[in-house]
Image 1 (cartoon, rainbow, N blue to C red):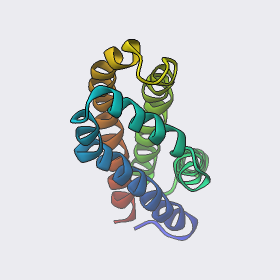
Image 2: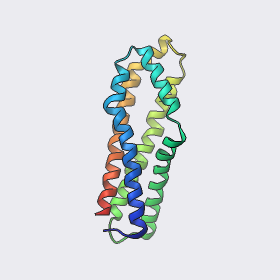
Image 3: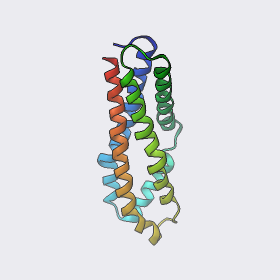
Image 4: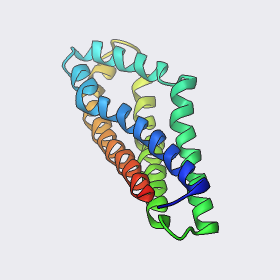
Length: 159
């Protein structure tokens, strides 16, 4: 079992990546389905509101803070290479940094930005909605699995 600062970092890693996984899981399992069931104009309006309000200090601290923590865990692990848990710590960090944070930046955020461009209630916005829901949700599934797997890897580093 890992000890000392690695233990603290791994526990914080479990908490951060696990909480983010929960947020993403909620979107994948019911939020997006609920939004998709609305008439397109209402779904677009609701998602635009969610995208604007999601960028709160609390969520950004959790989401970006977890990415910073994962990067710190990776660097500390690579530099000091603990006797136990090194592979799991690096795997957890890579899963979150690439599969959660990276996918968000390169797949979900561009779609959010594209959804914000057309004016509310326009034919362009409602035409884009089915594609947006399908693609955004698919990438969100990736983020959910990656964040969950990162939390699991950190748990395994603790055992």
